[in-house]
Image (cartoon, rainbow over all chains, first blue to last red; front, side, top):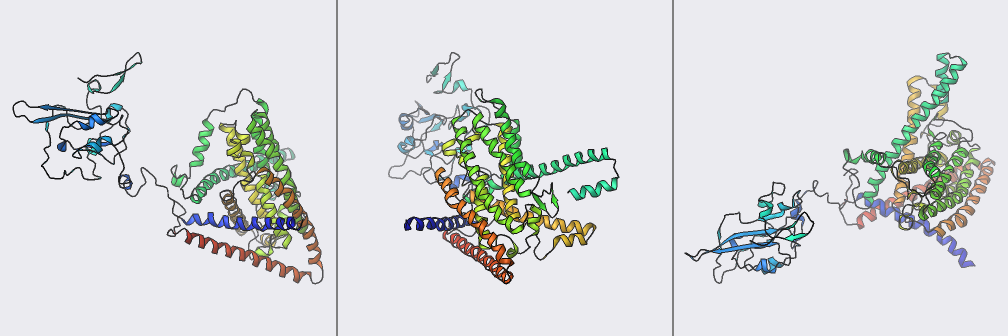
Length: 204
Length: 410
């Protein structure tokens, strides 16, 4: 019985002390800087600089480093890369005529950039790719009609690769521009026919 | 307000019939003034509460609509006003429609008797505090009505919980009020304030140990009556979705919240009136005499000063109530009832008897001196607790190991 009476008054004391301490804790938080990052418009440093070092964003390609091995296209689980290499029969020089990345399909798994022997394919720190038209999300790193000679690595020399955190994809980021090409010409894109059945367009 | 009206009406020299019309018009004007005050207060407080809550959680809170997000409450109100007023098929429609107004009326009617400053009161009732306790109990009918008519298990549970809670906590809050009424010898809110002084040791909270106890009982009980955290069981999100509010939307939903935030003022103003000296200006012993002695602008200034003092005390209490909401976790139902019946009710009786006894002691030959010593000692105790609190807060800030950062607006 005595312990019950003791408990009764202990409860009262505990109520007062715990409320006292609790109020002091919450009040002290009024003197602390809020941790909120007011993305996107009220931030001190650009969001690209706040990202972790291994952040995987939109794929960026330095076509000048591409050796035309086609590994990225083969390894991509979703088929969001398309490359084409032609050989000039006279000079035996190989040219890259196509390097498209459909970032609306890309799931940023990183397999292509891991397999790229020269570091031509890389993840940038760009990620803000919202657009009104999904066709805009196809980035063509080789303009139609352009022919870029493949890179020839010098034996024993380390490939320079792309400088970190210097996105070249930004140059291609014109999301809200009208579609760069006729959408029907974009290969590998699933288009919905009128009867509702998805149909994969065949590569030409 | 009444005196002002009669002064004005005498200068107009009205016929008896015109007088009736003038009184009716005056009532409309006064209620419109009070209503606009309540609406503004409820809206602005909802913004303040969200900002304070944000900072206490290391967030910022709404800061986009208008300067510092100040217009957030208008945007929210407008949004709710434009939303569809959904009334589900299976509800008891007349009761469902009527319940929000009853809740709102219960809170709003209390403003009729609440003082805002010296002589600034819509209706200076001689049973003021009794009227306020009685009329705020109307809220429970509205909440029960909303819970029952919604035809929803969460609403019903919320409504029943609310009824049980409010009815239970009426008792300790009534006892705590009585211990002040015993000292003041009146139920009139203005007279209760007039019985106190400007300095803390003249306030009823530090009048004797029993009123200090009654202050805590009253504070907790009135939080429970207003369904504020830590007693917001009727709307406990984790178990009851939103309690009696579950089926409501649009403007009817706003009416409930309007009542809730208006109630914040009611509870803070009541505590200020009963325990914290109301509009008494420190250093002015007899405000009634001072006001009666001057005329014109000086009189208005004195009354304005009393209003400022009253508002300052009340707004600090509003902050404390908000602060408690974001500090303490919600109680369990049985804990709530145990707290009321096992702790508050017995101690409430003790407070009432104790302060009655203290009135007798103060009237005895040596009583005056004893009373003064007790009052000063209790004020000292209050100051000591405040100092300890400041020390504790500073220690906590240091423990956070962040640079000291104080910016009210972000």
